[in-house]
Image (cartoon, rainbow, N blue to C red; front, side, top):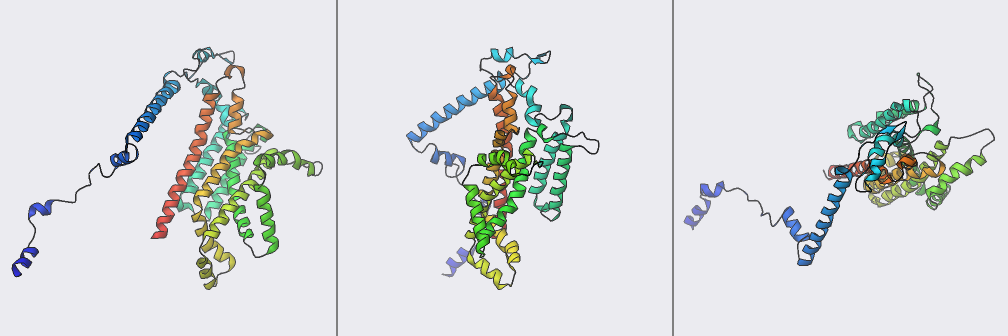
Length: 384
């Protein structure tokens, strides 16, 4: 027995100690294993996978030919008229990106004065910078509200003008991407706090407040956004005193805020209901007031639970701003549609819609990816 114990306690040979942990074979884990398990697990799955790969390859090759190889990027202009004969000669075999080259200013800035296009362009950059700063957690302090207030004030000064040597531009001349960003940004910034108040009101123990919030949510959610925009544009001015007129853009903005707040309120209320009852009881045991309990304990946890549906609502609201076309506001999509009304560019709507779709996709995809990263970070922080 002593010899067996000594042999067991003896150090292993150098050759065995030098062998490190082995990696699992590629056929067991990794991309190859995933492909075998999900794409080539049987003859039928293999046949479907190969057929789809063939169709995708054909589509990609056709798109590359249409969008790049056979495309026309510019056309000559004679006496202020674009000569699009070369684009029409393609007969659909190639894209005519010359329509974007000629009409990109109108698509982005609408009928804003041509010589003042630097102002809405700067506003777009300010919006993007505001989004980036707001996405960084190190800026999540009270000063962020001042940054928002200052940036939005600066954007208003640039768009309107009439001061600091800037010429005045009425809101009827605004359009394009900057209108979409204004409607969506102000809509999110004002609808979100309103939705929190409405969600808390629906859970209130005061019958009057609860009934008012329920009525608001059910009424707004029961009608489409188009009807609210129509009411704000056509019906609302009829109830105003004579001589008092509210700008059309402001009326559309209020309608979007009220519509978005009703949907966000239900999302927030879902997060409040999903929170365990023990969190409320623990906060009460600490002797916190209602607003302390709600602001420091309840709301942070509830909002973390509903980050995906919140961002989904934000993305939907960003795209729904295109509905303002029914009241004559030139947002990004409406400006793109109007850009091809000119006879010289009729028939090239695909190029315009692809460009506008890419712009929408960039903003929506950025919101989606940021929400996924934020949710993962908050969940990891909670586990720690």
